[in-house]
Image (tube, rainbow, N blue to C red; front, side, top):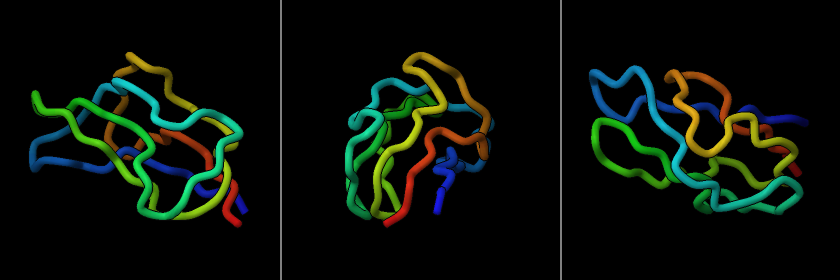
Length: 79
C-alpha cells in the first residue's frame, strides 16, 4: 500500500518549506520514526521522520524545491 508523506505545518504561520537534503534515496528501506528529509521552514532547519515503515518508492520533491504545506514529498510502499 502506498503512503503519501506530506509536508506538515511546523509553525502557526508556515505556508511553504524548502527541501534541503534527503536522508534516504529511492529504493531504501525506512523504519517508523527514522529521519527521512531535512526541511527549512520559518528560518529553521527540521529533520522530518517517517511515520510508517516501508520502502521509498518515489521522492516527489527534489532538493532545493519549495513546497506548500500538505504537498506530497515522498511515496512510501508500506510493509
